[in-house]
Length: 445
Image (cartoon, rainbow, N blue to C red; front, top):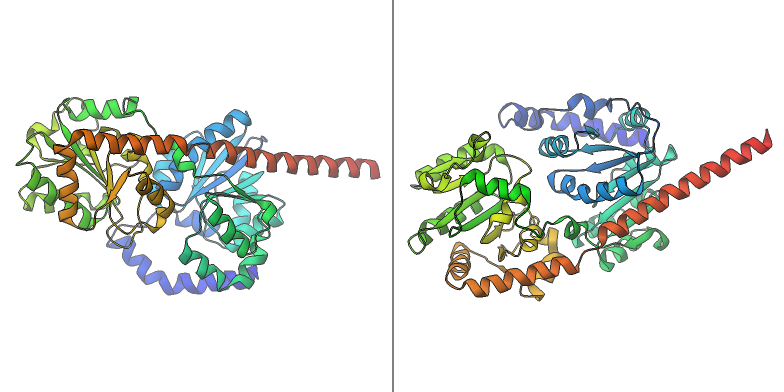
């Protein structure tokens, strides 16, 4: 099976090579890490300590790992961590957040590349964040006697149907997974229907609730506040993880509303920072003055909004801290086909939150927020305008909405503790099995 998969991957990669070359040359995307992705040649780990290999696809999953790793470090002092990512933005953030760890691009799902990674980092456990199921990655790791765990697992209705069509393929593969921590009982049911042993599944909750900061006076947010020179009476509209059309919506709302509120400030945090230059030019054509966050790296108290209408955050890894400055928040990736971005972070700060109708990636979180009247769906520029204007004109109602969201986040916590307990247990079980095997071999000798 591995040989057949390798051949299929080679054919696909060859067929896609013109498109990949176009992206690299003209769009300046996916230019780095090709040697590691093709060969699995990563830095060799020198320590003989227990090592946990954690795989995070992109920025969201990289942030997800922070509270898990902090707790694992406490539970397993001296443990090494190796972090792999798929995207360049995820890699850059991981290097920033986990500089003391081995950080590398996860190789393509070639069996030889996976074997090389295993040989170099010698992991005791592989942890996959959310739903990252690659056949060779799982099977080769399993064949090396290394347990594979899935954490913060989720499987949408669409993904469930797609996997279900090939249950004959996925069932034996999922049988090689040591344990699965899922966000809710519905995801647990779907995993069982795909063939995961019920005893391997645990409903651990959503780790993103634990990782969200509820204190807007945290050090990083205060530094950003000083950096741009925000004043106490400024009303800050933050639109984060936005796609192109959502930036334009937010800018249009800002243009209309600043007639009603001269202290209104707009901070845009696009999902893909490489388009920040074009976004700046587009906003200037709309008649706005624009400042890029990257131009403020070495300055403090810039009083940005005395000379600019809009701040574009064109650096990676700061969005969670910018949400702490928001008076009202719009979560992007929700108007198009993206399926939504993380709305837990702004809600945790007690900010009134809105987002578009396309939120299937966060379906359960959205339902919790809406059930508690802690967020609002906006389906158009006009509805976004109405929401922001109401937040300006009715601050008490906006504050109550934000408080409900913050309380919800606090109530949902506990997933990190349950997830880490699951991981520590599987490591302990593996060590017990190894000790028993060693004892049997000694007795036989």
